[in-house]
Length: 450
Image (cartoon, rainbow, N blue to C red; front, side, top):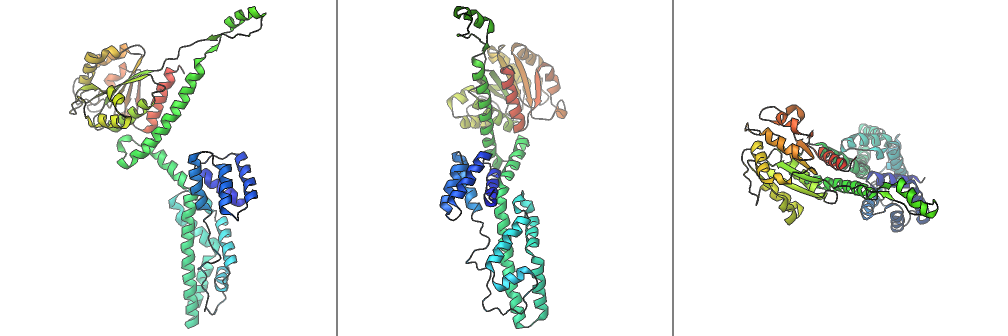
């Protein structure tokens, strides 16, 4: 394969563009037709072969401009300024000889060859810049050039010192170009990896520790997460809607047609979308987890029939209407700030919140409902009201407790978690985006009967 095209496709793949073998062959044929002389034509041909969506075309444009602007040495380059320079020392190093003779073509070839041997496309992190610069300097033969410069200084005299000064200037210019080249290679081949690494960190970081600057990235991750869950479980429900073939009824109907199964009969199975009741502690220690959990749940309206949401601190209040009246981001902001919600943001009281739920909202507890409690169970040593939680557990299909603390802390200090555990069908740690994704997927899976 054309080495230039191979490197370009590698850059595209590392930037997030999916390219199949067939598309690679199409791009190869396109490059053969267009050639590399007309940059605009080459861009159009390769874009038609490799970029399949609007997002991929945007990535393609950025990569193409970066990749094909890597003109290390050009014909009108100012790197080799040898006018008026009387060569006192021809130099033993090839780099010195090219500088003194003004060999632009040879220097360009040496530069590209050194880049290939140093495998500068293998760079994956900003911390490797120094390493790859040293590799490229070594392949270019910079040590030999430095020795020649030192010899000129030792010879002395005006002409020798002028030549040494000119070589030093050209060397410094070359070193700056090496630095720029490495940075461009890093943008081409490692930018996507750095993004994925930072995204991996955010997915596994404790939500309570994330800073405000990370929230925009979190929302983008959640958007992709929700789209994945919608696609997966909407397809499963559509596939299950028709049911399985009922052989007995099909064969019975085929008697009319002499045993030929012209009409098929299907077993029907009702697929219930889950009804979710969420009871969330909105104290400061849990607020970020609550925010993103509610964002995910209320975004899954296609696969969850209804979500009734309750929040509590010193008392409990229903906030379901907020998600019906306001756009999702505004509703979440109101939940977080308590604006327009009859809730007291004082000392957290789990027992009092459970009593409020039983006394005011127990009518929503049915055998189709899953109750999810999200909180750290730290109730400031107030009465935990475990009998009330037992009442809730007995009247719903399933009770799930999500705790943002690690299990080793459950029951420590003012945590009542161990007293609540006997009445929970499932109790899970839930402090990161990855935890939230697994919890929601588990919830959808068990309601789909898988």
